[in-house]
Image (cartoon, rainbow, N blue to C red; front, top):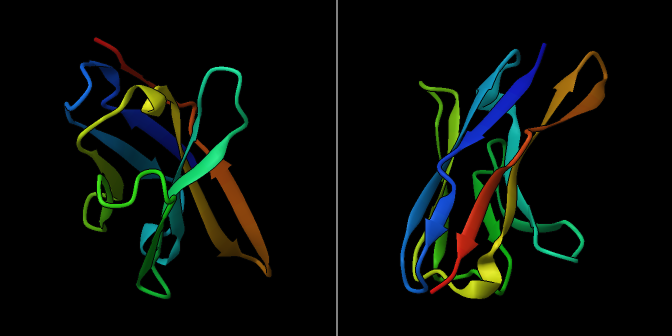
Length: 120
């Protein structure tokens, strides 16, 4: 069973930093496309950052570019999101997502989310 477990969220003041972690199991992590999404109060879920293993590329939302960094550790089956210079508008539930190929189809798996609150 493929599973994603996020951690690292919390309460932080504007300008502060947090590092989110997503520990995965149940699939070949090195071949998976990993990404982070978030859903703020009263807003739809949106893509924050993505890392595609096969392409070796990264992608960021304009609102976080230059502040957030996605990375992965294949030995630990873990993807990270380093968040610096946090702003109140970054307040959201952050979700980890995996997409991988299995038996001629793409499989999509979501974590349960971790809460990030940015407030003075």
